[in-house]
Length: 237
Image (tube, rainbow, N blue to C red):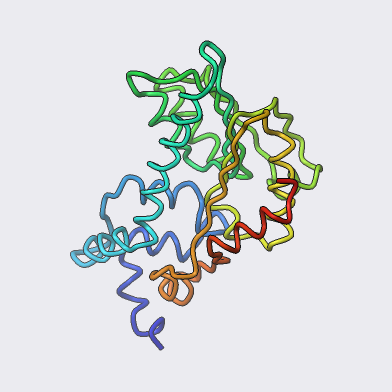
């Protein structure tokens, strides 16, 4: 009922329309995430931008903005504790627009990070590669198109050197537990001694869940901190 009554209005929002129509096949693609990062309200008519502003300030959207900052800080922390002069190899799985890398590498005190972006979507990789070229940072990046699930099962075609940091946010929300454990196991094997793995997941208390489930049809697998810890306990960690 709510969907039927609100649909004509909510779809005036550029973000809501994009998330619902899923032109790339699923909602959480790089372009949708980039809309959240850019945080610029747009839409049809006088009402569209107002609805768009509301959606871009929902808790789930704010969490996406926050995770960009958290990841940037995590990359800097790992780099700060790495031996001087040695490049810090970092891999992002389902990398999307990879804005956190650019935040780190454009800083005045940028560490020597060598970033690998792995994504199944060639448009996402082309988008991030274009930014890297514009900023003169291409030498710091490797872009690999691969299916992360197949990669975690040993059937991918991306060869990684040992990594200081591997992270995955916005991916495990779509994967069943067994696949997440496979991913954690694979990452364990890819890390250097003392390396770090970060796995991010939307929590069950997500206050935007009803809107995402029933209006956007953006259904995620929600997990608590304890549930993530249990998945790590089942893994090679």
